[in-house]
Image (cartoon, rainbow, N blue to C red; front, side, top):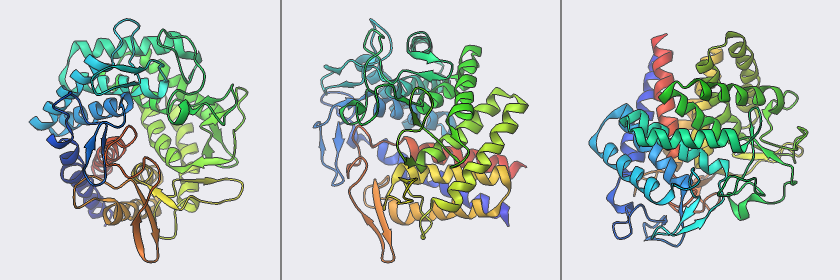
Length: 413
């Protein structure tokens, strides 16, 4: 029975990737042939414009998706889009003078933001690493490794910890450097945000290169998660803390708990230390049971986040968190064999297919409110747009690829 359920889940994930997500993101419609690159905005009504700047985060994520799709699926369209995006990131975002990449540029390539937040630089490294992995381009590898070494020599503040934001010439800068007003408030000046996207980027870089320096950096970040950021009382990860390791506020992102869980497991398995793997698996079982038992709504959809003190939950479900919920619940099933995780994973897939898939134009809606009357597309994280600096194909494509790989592993067992 479980074998058939896993095969069904695998088929669903592959169909989402190849029939729903990638066709829209590979479409000629979103490519700005006048200025190059991709439009800054495509609205829910499919109106294209450049009212927002071109973002490094979006471009790096798209480079990763197209390259990863080609590496796993082949298909000339994925190769064409990966190469087009690589040229965009190389010609407009790459900083040839100081290394790394600019955060935002205009449609004509004018640099708008020179700060270098680790959140954004992570996707520069991740996209280049996957592009090298898929196509063997030495230029991409050189750019990725140069950025990695800058992060390690300039941005690292302690083993596993990195400054949130750097200036163009790699001096420490205020805030976290991305999001609304660069996320300079309401956090204290000494706030530390765990660089989980850099963690992802380093994993992709290690998978592509097997470089021992990258692996050592990954070990440091994994140990920070386990030693400093895991909260055993609340059974979740503190992603933003004070310099002395205290939780800031009481808001928790369940989507990030899900995302970090299977990422951490993938990293420690790559490191290959049996004691580290055993310890990680024990902690992740606690965390994933917490998510399973407390962080889904009555209809089976993952809450995006909530307040730990009041137990209030956000009523709006967000596309990227729902995707991460699928991967995390399947990871929980792999770790424990508890059928409840598999059932929760299947329910998440059902919710996504029923309420998030945009059957008119492709890809997914951003935000959905679910009640006894069904689902309603509403405003929320990243607004309504189908494409903007925050709305991208990364989380849902990654979920599909992760689900296929984990189902294959479970079916092989």
